[in-house]
Image 1 (cartoon, one colour):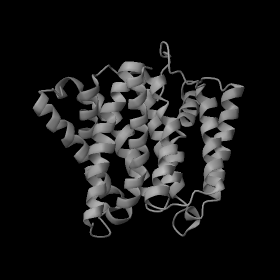
Image 2 (cartoon, one colour; image 1 turned 30 degrees about the vertical axis):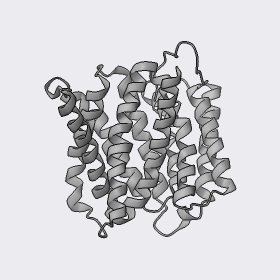
Image 3 (cartoon, one colour; image 1 turned 180 degrees about the vertical axis):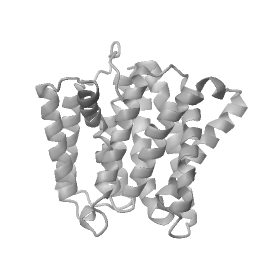
Image 4 (tube, one colour; image 1 turned 90 degrees about the vertical axis):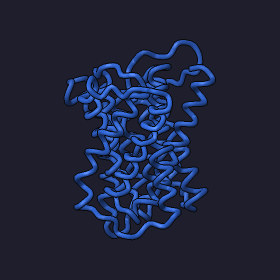
Length: 297
């Protein structure tokens, strides 16, 4: 991973860590469905405008089936689940629960592909579970009335990301711009039917609209362009590093801009989850030489 790609990785982690901040601002006002419909719509319109200027084709006829699966499992459904959790959970907790995606991938591999769970992977899963229990169990926000299901929704969102990653291992190769563009239009269509059932509970202020716009254009449209570019240049294993950096920025932005309390349980739970994730993935950071060739998100 050269310097340019390392800086892209840091930028992506900062942007995706910030997405939980903006969801915390928008979800209580707009509700999960309205917020995410605006998010994926703005995320689709941004590359559409760029494509018109740069004359970049979506190639919908050849790739529309491919766009549907990551559009659902990598965007529409996890975004909705995280937005549901964001009504009550802090940005810090959401960002750490997001980091459990590789653990779900190991479980799916063991159950679906019958891949054996090694001692290292099993230890990582136990640590990850303990870290989540510590993080959520001692967080006063998650104990509020009606918030019990929010951590489950966030963990289910992380499960969706692992399903999308497993699909990506055998999916057809599509260039990064078209991949980011097409999946966002697919996600827009998937979220649309939910709008009549989950209307916005309040009228948004200009600040909320600004958060929604940034969430769509920056945290989705631009972020996915960076992400697919990283996968194309350094491979999915090196791009996996963003999983470990997201919580750092999620906790930082939540403390700076939402004045969220960062207690001992936040730091300890986050560290345990990240160590467990590293054990599950067999991750060893490499910032020089040839990138690893194994797949993963």
